[in-house]
Amino acid sequence: MNTAESRVLAALDEQVLVDDLVALIRVPSVTGTDAESDLQHWHGERLTRLGFDVDTWKLDLAGLAAHPDHPGTEAARAEGYGVVGVIGPEGVPALALQGHVDVVPTGDLDKWHDRNPWSGAITADTVHGRGACDMKAGVAANLAVARALVASGVRLERAFALHTVVSEEDGGLGAFATMLRGHRADAAVITEPTSGNVVVANAGALTFELRVPGRAAHGSTRLAGHSAIEAFLPLHAALSELERERNSGPDPVFGGNPLPYAISIGTVRAGDWSSSVPDLLVAEGRLGVRLGESPAEARAALELAIAAACRRDPWLRDNPVAVSWPGGQFASGRIDPTHPLISEVVTAIGETEGRVAALGAAPYGSDLRLYAGVGGIPTLHYGPGDVSFAHAPREQVDIPELIRVTRTLALLAARRCGAHL
Image (cartoon, rainbow, N blue to C red; front, top):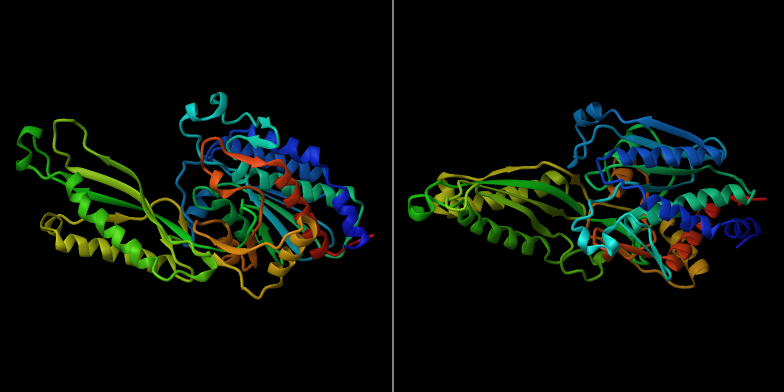
């Protein structure tokens, strides 16, 4: 570690890092809400004060929706903003750190401490609240790196960029817009929680909807009708078999995960009266996309499985199921396993955290596939937080881990961008 790199690490303000995380959590930026925009403007203002060249733009929601590669959305959204800050010499940045400001809804408030998921409360060495792990800790870390690069007084041979985006949780519209805007980098790290691993690949995830017909009748004469709920049962069995087939022999990068490409039903709605046979069931779920598989190929696999199940069932043969693909459409993505960014991140972890980090893959979709695909930017994940707390009640992040990971990211940025005195 040279003198300039050491100076960048020494300039990290750990208290401000934690304070920023608490402030971020206290903004209830559920995906699709106006609070997403509030945090984007918050970031733009702070980067401007740090001396970054900041691009803040309003997303053209209608134009993005009409694009043939639109990634899909699940939340209603009246507006959205992109924010990219760049500091250093002109040219393509050597490194971009990226994070999303949106979070998922809170769920049952009774499962949160003091029924307040937006408290940002600190107990011992832990920060609590929705987004603490996914991924406001990573967002705070990125901003801390930007601040340290400026406060250290070092000069950069290559530019450094910080990207903040909206709509990651419901499809990745913010990342998609950032790539269409033309922002690029030689490499990018998305600071999603990685449980200490370096995530070099992501499975994809496609939202699907099944509309299963039935025939209404009075509940007392149910044999005169056909329950859409009962009609759904062979379809559920067919999806379970499809899941088994698609998860046989997964890529070793998943590290023994027995189910990297899960198929799950998330919502089921049927019937409108307790004593009536339901004539429609609507089920929504997610289909895991295999590494290297296109979304079109994954959709075709599910549609074929549903069609085959309908042919085998006497009722569904004459009353077939309608399959559609609303909501988020996450392709899979990965970085070239020989790209130097991987070894650079692993080396930085070893020097700042004193350990050898494992490489792995995530079974969920993320913005990685948009940066790597649409943007052509070699991208991986490394960020603070245990992913098992993501989307869960009592979400939390460990402060010592947050600090360690931020130091690693700062060293990586200083090295990639050629920090010198």
